[in-house]
Length: 101
Image 1: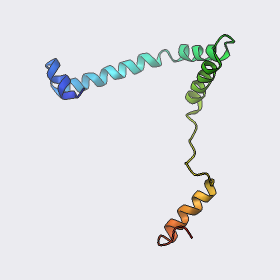
Image 2: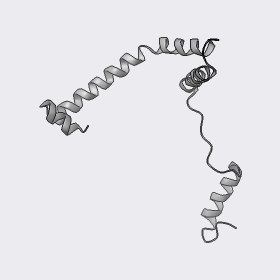
Image 3: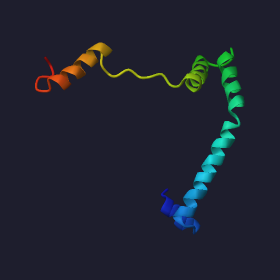
């Protein structure tokens, strides 16, 4: 829903509404961050649980790793490897008239 439509429905000006929405989002983030330790403990509990499914344990482990170390980088869709990709980029830049040489 657009800010203008929300403003029209609520009878507020778009500027005032967007300020209020920003304040609300900040409060929600703050409340959520207040539960970080508990949420992490739940994820660790699931990861270690012998009763949890393998999929749940892996999902919890991935969530923990993503939050602690950041998401893993995804390789570029090139099966020739990174060195070949660099050489291809170099050929395109240096010899744009014949990039496949």
